[in-house]
Length: 593
Image (cartoon, rainbow, N blue to C red; front, side, top):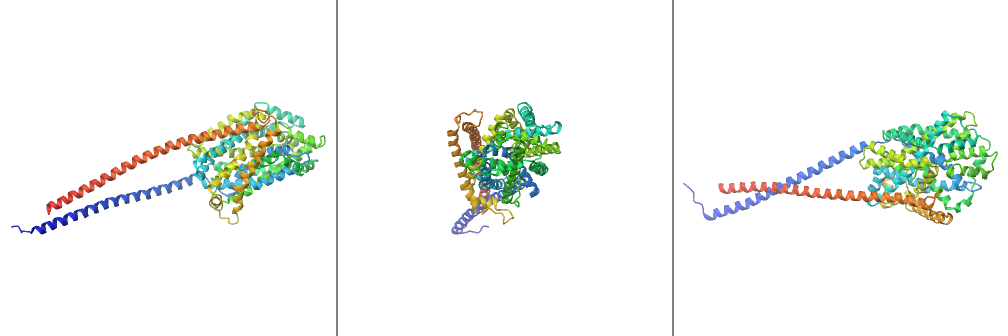
C-alpha cells in the first residue's frame, strides 16, 4: 500500500532539495578553495623555513675573525706595506721644496682626516652590511645600474696588484742577497747591485715567488690570512723600530729630519703637490681600494667600525712617518759629509726612475757601516718582505672575493688571479720605467675610487647608511655623527673633482709631451688611455652581465608562467572532480527521494 501525497507537498520538497543541493555544492567549493589556501600557506611557511635555514647556512660559511686583535693586525697588514717604506720617502723627495718638505707633510696629514678615514669607515660599513665583494656590494647597496663602478674599482686594484707583486719580489731578492752575499760598502757598489738586478731577468723570478707565496697563504681563506698577519705585522713593526733607532744615532741624521719637517709653502702652488699628498695618503692607508670592504665581510656586529676605521689609518701613517724619518736621516747621514742638501735631494730623486731605488740603494749601504749591520739588514728586508706580501694578499683578496660571489670555485678563482697578475705584471718586472708609470697611473686612479664610493653612499642615503651600517656596534661612544655625512657628500667629491681638474690643466700647460701616451715619463695622455681601458672593461662586463640577467630573468618568467598555468590547471581539475562527485551525490539523493 502507498500513501497518497498531495502534489503541492511534492513540489515543495523538490524545491527544498534543489536549494539544498545548491548550498551543498557551494559548501564543497568553499572546502576545495579552503584546502587550496591552506596548502598555499603551508608552502609559504615551508619556503620561509628553507630561506631561514639558507641564511643560517650562509652565515656559517662566512668566516669571521676570532677577536679584535686578529682583525686589527690583519687590516694593519693590509695597509702597512711598501707604500709606507718605499713609496712615501720617494714621493716626499719628489714633492718637497728646495728648503723643506714640511708643507707636504701637513697636506698629507690633512687628507688623512678629510679623505682616508671617512673612506675607510665607509668601506667597513659596506662590507659588514653586504657580506659581498666590491662588485656585489655596489649591486646590493646600490643597483645593477651602477655595478660597472664596482668593476672599475676592481680593475684599478688589479693594476696596482700587478706591479706591487714586482716590488714584493724586489724585497725578497734583497732579503736573499743579504743572507748569502756581503753588503755593499759604498753607494756606487750599492747602485751597481740595484741596476744590475733590475736590468736582468731576476725580477721576473722574484715576481713569481712573491705571487706564489701570496697565493699559498690564501688557500686556507680568512683564517690563514689571520694567522700569517698575526705573525708578520708585529715582527715588521719591531724591525722598523730598530731601524729607526739605528738611523737616529748616525752623525748627520738630524739634517735629514730638519729638511723633512721644515715647511716650504711655495710648493702649495703646484697641483701635483696636492694630488701627490692625497694619493699617497690613500696609497698608505689603502683607503678607497676596497680592501677593507672585503675584510669587513669577516667582521662581527660587536666590532666597532668607527674605532677600527680610525685607529688603523692613524697607526699606519705613524709607521709611514717613522719610515720617512729613517730614510731621510740615513740618506743625509751617508751623503752629508761630501754633498750639499741640493745634491743629496737630487740623488734621492734620481735613484732609479722617479726614485724607485731609494730604499734598495741606501739601506744596504747604511747597514754595512754599523755594528751587526748584516743582521739588521736581514731583519729589515725580512720585515719589508712581510709587509709587501701581506699587502699583496689583501690586493688579491679583493677580486678573489668578487669571483667567489659570482660562484667561481675558490681554488680556481685563486689560480686564475695569480696567473693573470703574474702575466700582466711581467712588463713591470722587466722594466723599471713601466713600473714607475704604473705606480703613477693607478695611484692617481684612487681619486676616482673615492668618488664612486661616495656616489654609492649618496644613493643609499648617507644618514640611513650611517645608522644601519656603521652605528650598530655595542660601543655607544664610538658613533659617527653628521660630520660623516658632510665628509662623504661634500668633502670627498669636491676634493677629488677640484684636484683632478687642476691636474688636467696643469699637465697640459706645463708638459709639452702631455699628449704622448708612450713618453718615458708619466703623462696626462698615458693616464687617460689606461683609465679609458679600465672604463671600457667595466662597461663591457656590465653589458655582458646585463644581457645575462635579462636572459635569466626571461627564462625565469617563462618558467614561472608555465608553472603557474600547470598549477591552475591542476587546481581546476581538482575542483571539477569534487564538483562532479557532489553532482553524483545530489543525483543519488534525488533518485532516492
